Image (cartoon, rainbow, N blue to C red):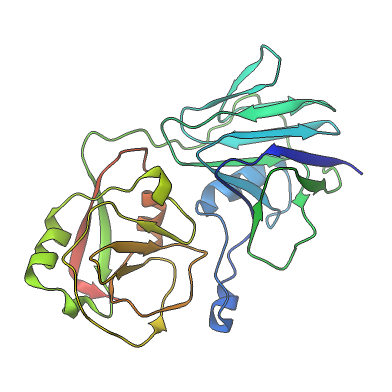
Length: 283
């Protein structure tokens, strides 16, 4: 059987297909790639089905070995990856070829958090009913049938997002519990730049480094979804992601539309952002 073996999985590596919004009402996380447009473009360029799984990784640190020839494509800003023991260096955004027995190494990312890797054959595991399939060291991925690939180009145009010199303005709308904010927390929310660390970058939610005032609000569990911003009793802010729970008891003070969530995941390491609140819009 043709397969791809993950010799080293990195901090958080998973298989991602399409978001499952229809499962939200059943209590299942939505799942799907954090960058659905990038994943869709890579599938189209490689000629694989639009619902084929792609490898999503945080922070890099992957090593894998192929048992058959493969053509692949990687996306992440300003990163190189190499065949182990070979002189060939390929930049992100270039097609590359793997021969049977070749090992691919993706180093630790220095500028960004998120990356994607896809091949001209679909990837699968024994687990097929989950939106997110977490991969660990020594995981084996079965390869689907070879497809007729589109015209080969050595270089393709994938979008990249360089480091900004000023904090990024992130449009948001007021959440259902926005009225619970005290004046001091409201002022900080509108004026203070926020950041998150590599350890806080997670598919369930991003924990921001900067906090608001602690509070003692006790609420019944209410519906949440990707983009909900929760305010914990300690003052910490959590931006829920596609693998987050579908209910929660913390105040839901903000909501990020899809365009703002995409912009957030594209930030480089250390990049600050500020919430741009539209007072006329609420969620």
